[in-house]
Length: 154
Image 1 (cartoon, rainbow, N blue to C red):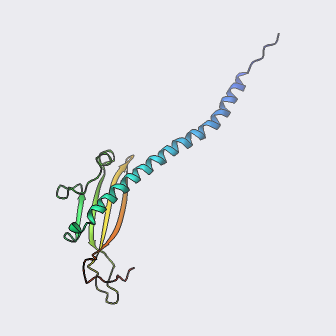
Image 2: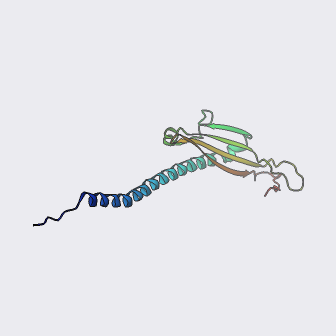
Image 3: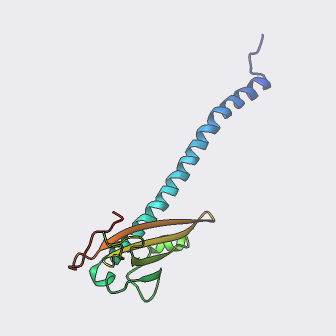
């Protein structure tokens, strides 16, 4: 009687072939997971920056405090905060800068445009030990003034 079985070389070759096919698939899943995690952090940062920007654009705040640079968090400005989980997990901090829009002048005169403000939110955090930054920039015009001009930059 002759017994039929696999030799050690055949078994090792089969394991190698399966390994060559499975390892790239596993690496794709790992890379996909990392990409989703990075996208989640950027989404969290953009939502936090937009919330800060929305609070800063209110008429009661913005036109009374120009120019100003606020570090976030700041006990003097408790309305500007970062989500606790984002701040703690990524050691996040931020800065809100409100200033007259640089480089914008009144059309035809070259004079500064004092009724146009630039608002910049800068968020910084550590992601896997690497420093990251997110910037959100917006403009706000004082439409409650009779002196509103058109900027030559637009």
